[in-house]
View (tube, rainbow, N blue to C red):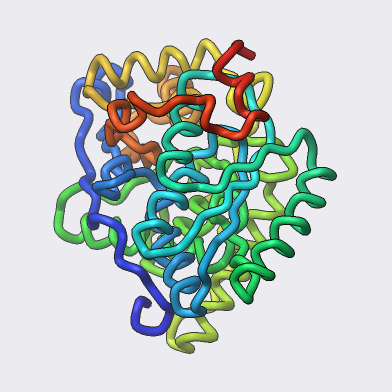
Length: 349
C-alpha cells in the first residue's frame, strides 16, 4: 500500500500481541490477548501513529508547511500530530474545544506546547468554525498555501488506511501462530477510523472476527452510519488504487457499536473504567486511560463476567500511548500557554 499511497515511516511495527493468561483464566475465556499499539512509536505510541504515517505522508508529498487538526483540549491525536509533524519539518496547529480537566489533559497540553504546536481553544463549534477560517487565512498569507486539514482522530479514508494495514498485520501474526484467530476484538470507538479500518482489513484477509467498538465520544462523532460510510469510502479508495483489492460489503453482522459504557460525557471517568484501568495495570503492568481504552476494556470485562465470552478467543486492541513523557514537561510553565488554557491548571472540572 505504501508504494501507491504516500507514507511517512513513523511507526515501530509490528506491535506485539501478548497473552494475558491470568486475566483470561479469571474471566473464563479460551484466550485473551492484547495488541500493544501503545508501543507503536518510540516518541509517542497509540493508534494515531498508524494513521499519521499516511496523513503526514500525504502532507509531505503535497509540500505542506503546516497541518491543522482538531480535538478536545487534551486530545491524544492532536499531541501525536504535533510530535510527528515536527519530526517531518511541518508545523502543527491544534484547534481544540473544552473537555473536563484532568492530569492527562494538563500533561497533553504541556507536551503539545513543548512539541511546538500552535494551540487554540474555542468554547463551541460555531466559534471553532470561525477560528478555522481566521487561522487558515493567516497561514495562507504567511506560507503561500493553507495548512492541510486532518480531521479529529485522523479518521478519514487516508487515515483509516493505517488500520487496514493493522488488520493485515494481525492476520500475519495469526498465520505465524502468535495468537489464534480472534472471535472478537474490543476497541475504543472515538472517531471510527480505527474501527472501520480494522473491519475492512479483516474482511480483506478473510478473518471472520467480530468488532466490538465501544463508543467513547458523542454520538455525532461515533455512530453506525459514519462507520459504514468510512468503511465503504476507504474500500472504494483502495479498489481505485488497485482493482485487485476486493469490493466488500460492510459487515453489519460482525460490527457492533456499543453505547453503554460512555458514561456522563467525553473524558468523564466511570466506576467501570476505573476498575478496568486498575485491574489491567495490576495483572499485566499495562496502562490504560479513562477516556478511551479504560471504557473499552470495561466492556470486555462486563461481557466476560456475564458469560457472553465464555470459551472465546478475545483480543483487546490497546490504542493508548504508554511511552512515559512525564519528565519531558517537568520544566514547562503553563503560563507560557495561551491564556485560555490556564484554567485547566488552576482548577479541576
